[in-house]
Length: 279
Image (cartoon, rainbow, N blue to C red; front, side):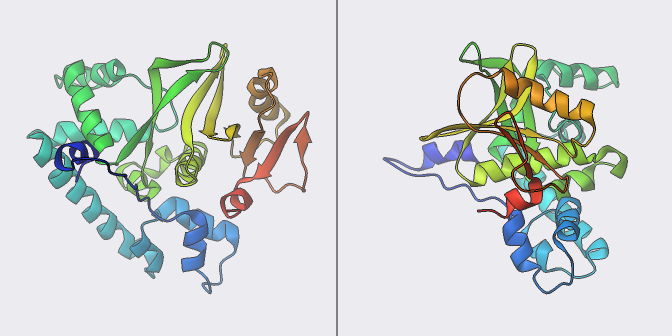
């Protein structure tokens, strides 16, 4: 059932409970006894995805691809194309691949339309918008809006999209496109969703904060980077957080092996894997 159908079929009050694939902590529990360390399990988690059945498969290289392909095609054909009356499946797949290759990057509906039109296909901005809505309603992608921290307002343009499972993205794209930075950013977004936060992209003047995670107790700012061992990279990741004058927590999540209590003027750095299994 697509998310947009709930209000139509249910009357009165109801609560929507969204189910995501396994968290990394749950994945590690399922993989207990496999002889792999935390980083090796995380590499598999990124590569093969986190659907519960995938975590139980042996010889993953041979077994995972047909399983993920089956899930993808079932959702694409039955949940999206059939319900929305979409007959041009190749065009829909072009949009899916474009968005999958752009996770973690600001994109606009017009940019998608222009890119597809430049390849010889014709598609309007309105059609792209309808297709994207169908894809988010089916929970293949999640759209995250930008929030102007200084101006205290939500922005209507250049949001980001994240995919429900990195295994699906890796199936759709060549390995050269599956960069670690955007993959771990996708993992952090999904984990914040699991933990019950409302998630936005932060904008502060010309700088960007990867995530603002808000709940009834306040907010936390997150930057996500594969590594900040390079001084220039560290300075770039710290810059927007240092400009924010409020006292909410500010974290940098990386794959770097770091000592406890790494702190930069009140901005904490944490190892991503330890953060993922901390709750």
